[in-house]
Image (cartoon, rainbow, N blue to C red; front, side, top):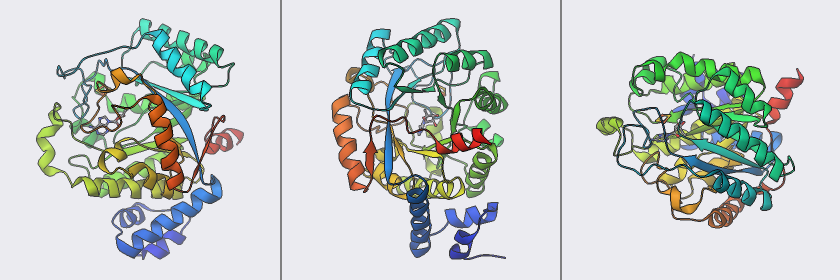
Length: 362
Ligand code: 5AD
Ligand code: FES
């Protein structure tokens, strides 16, 4: 039986077919979807936004994801690795400006050197902020023991996007070798959750070969896995990557933005109290992309606090916004933007996923 959007939105649990109908909704139906997700955000989270100061500390990567601008095979960029002092200065900036948390992100390297370095940085960040700065890590697939050491050193959230939960699609957008193994990605997510991290994942939206059925499957996976945080953004082609050859198959950018907003609205309705980030990639398509996401359900923003001179080299996709700005610029720009979305930035709080607390209390 085909239900109307209004009927679907009254249901407690969505089926795959329901989600596909929501993803395909247009006009008034789509407005109903956004209205419902905004109501749920207001009820469970409030009109609030928390910052994670984003430090893209190195673009050196050992992997070759076919979509990513900083893939190992791309020789067309300058590789950089911030010094420990530069990373700590960025963390201090976040602390002094009362950001509750930072996020440390880099290309993926597995090595004892990287393990020790990050562990040491975590201790020093906790020290400089009297234990107050929350830290999210986003440095890819690692061994269980490595994740555990970083957790013990003070990292309490981890972002590892699954990119697509359809294994066939995953294999089309990654090289097929042991370094890019779908099952290892799932195993890593499970390790993070078992260790006790607030665990975040997400997907890219509008990838070549991706269908509405794939996207519905992604949302069902996130619910089933019981994630605490979600980061989803539109796929944006990068000229120096192999996936560029499939550009002809893509939906227009405006549709990718639209579909991303629908995905955010639907996951907000399905998982009411998780943290949802308004991804920077949204802004690469629409100057108001992130504000739109905040209005309909997102509650986390990641102002870039990477020192300006390196930003241009962390281009995962073409047209990445704000690569010319300083950390201060990003903050004032985002604050103005958040108020445009009728929300308020909450300073000096971690802004943890409520879902995590409820899940752990069970
Ligand atoms: N377009 C959009 N997002 C991308 N990412 C990597 N490359 C691209 C791209 N071309 C995303 C991936 C990764 C995150 C850090 O950036 O989802 O997990
Ligand atoms: Fe670096 Fe995918 S290219 S992790």
